[in-house]
Image 1: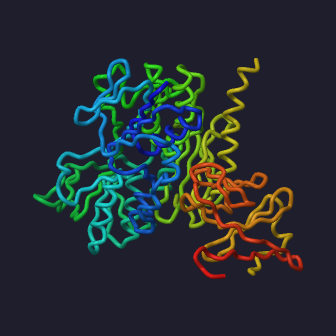
Image 2: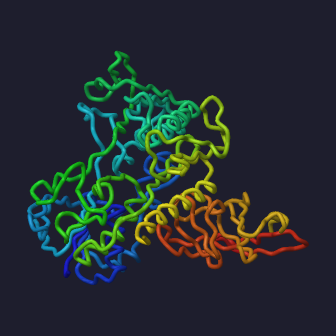
Length: 396
Length: 107
């Protein structure tokens, strides 16, 4: 391979570029990014960056020294428009093309929007530019903030807005937020954090529309209520950025379909991060985005799948002064056992708790609130359990 | 020089956080060696005293960055900057930390 093009200059794109060099690729390395920025870390955007505790230089994922060592051609502020049927030409904005031997697709996902959300005061929170705009608006005195969506982005953003002294309401369409991630029992416990942070949580009602002519003035709920709002933050999930691949021969279905080794239907095209549906699952997790590139690049350089991604799902969230960490593969019907800390009336104690999800006497997942040490132990045991379970059939 | 705790109150393989500014983490390895480093991971806000200690390496509890307690250098991503190291002594059975000078201060 003489040229490899990494499309996407965020976390997984940068990790892929690093892996290419670390695994001995010494050819031409092209990195295409639609944002004008060098790779930066997104998780702080809804937390310390929004509250002003962290600034942009602390978001940088790389520095001049490393950038020099990577020896890549950076095409930033440049959107990829297409990939030819053989996966040998990347078409860029303005008609430019890059001829390439290998492609790493790392185009991520974009924030889902609401109809009519082009009113002033309506924000999404995905990119640095989104966060800059919201941060600026949050410094203009006390405002009425409505956050649409009670997932992790919604909860973290609501928490940050409340910490800045704004009046915040979170609207969640489901009866309870985070049920798919945590299960109903623990989702209820985490939802109690909103109250602790002085934030109203309205559940079980959707949004009928946004009111306002130039700037947003209110959010109309589907149950007939109207919430006055100066600022609306739409946190209703993300859509993988696959539109540019429409003319390619790659299989697309809520992401780029890959095997367990991040390899697409073309052996010289791999996909990593939020855009990749690896072995049937698409994880929008920071840790997946950092772990997949090692395997994807090994397979890309080998020309076929030699390795597979086998990492235990892990994610964390900081909200209302609490740190939530989750690892494992829980299923509906798992029983939940609190092994540290004590819940009173379903609300989490100030010093946190640890919960194990169990099925047939085995631990399937672990959830921690402010109990990092036992969480780490449990997460390691889960990882070890998975690798032993994998080795058993091979030993037969 | 800051007193931390009695040596017998810091078993091997354990760590303790000292609420200095910035906070410091003191580790006693499985081999019984004592080390002190800045407690906050250089990648993002997480307490290394709550990390996973293995030999002379500690793994951050949030994103698994790893630091060498002897040098403060990161041994893997996502951390790229070192943590400061501090000298540790035991005087009359009490563990003490001698804070290294802050960068940019005269000491």
